[in-house]
Image (tube, rainbow, N blue to C red; front, side, top):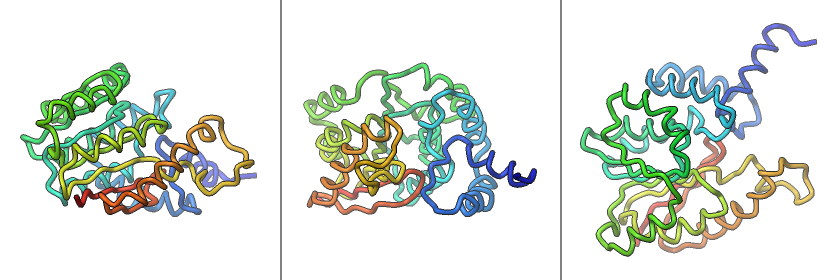
Length: 245
């Protein structure tokens, strides 16, 4: 029988965004409580807690990954960015808070209703003016941007956390839109750890369905001579791609 302390710890591990692949839940909790939550901006905390009440909360970016993205954007002095897959906007808010006041984020998602859950918090944080939200599928919008010509090599950073079956299609377009020296971040590239699971291993239906698409992406990124890559076990895995040519 679990003690009260054990029961509370197990409950914490069910919190929204708990996607860590660390073997020890206690170690992940230590990271959150020691370095993430104490430094988490109040607006991000509020949005994380609001999102936790949403039935699809597993879709959100984890708090430790939000902290990582925020620092990364500051380190590369990003100003013009793109996000494909917004949900309620936790990673979007992390980005907006990191950019200078005249920074811009082109944010695309097929569901504006979810974005509007987080919008009042983003507005209260004073960063909504940095965001250009567009509802609808991203691929046609990317094709139009490429056709226009003026967006080639114009983005400092692009974050992709959307339909995994289109990650390869996104990459084919985004490599032209990110600047040389700029970064593309693909989320969920370790996909619940399923990338190393045997084919007959028990998996949730959605995990099994998208697993092969994630494996295909990872193989393609590793072989792409136009980029340098770094796969990190943050959240559910994030692969950073630096365009070199």
